Image 1: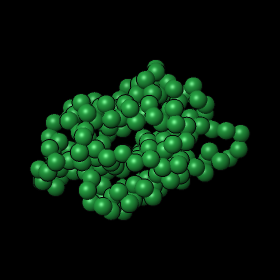
Image 2 (image 1 turned 90 degrees about the horizontal axis):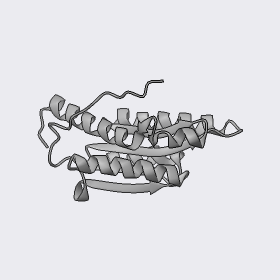
Image 3 (image 1 turned 90 degrees about the vertical axis):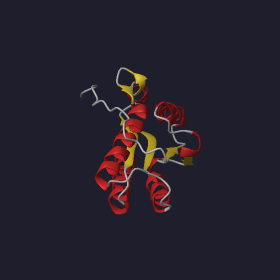
Image 4 (image 1 turned 60 degrees about the horizontal axis):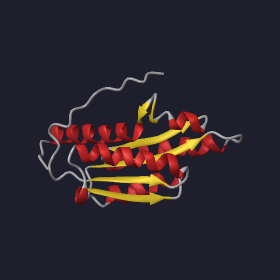
Length: 162
């Protein structure tokens, strides 16, 4: 598995672009750190205050419906979904992880808005911790970068400047 991520410089972000973050409460210590890193990185790009809205849902399974409601509001240039699903002893992991991923992607395709999959799917808690500032970087920051890059892409393709 690669720990190198493509770089992105936040040029060409419209000044009016707003971002919504939907964060699961399940595995809250991990998700809270994803959220902190995501907000920190968005703030570095000037997306904070009134340009940022945060919503909490019970778990990763509920992320797609919240993302869909936010997308339909037409108030956001991108929606970031954050969660953490740790494999257990039952097939529950497979159902939740697969449906969360499918649902988030479906919202993006149906609503034609960048919806970022910032959901960790790991075999154990240590793997999750390595992805919130450990040896595998910070996936909250990566989600923010992905949102910014997609906002810039949509702006270029549509020819709009926010």
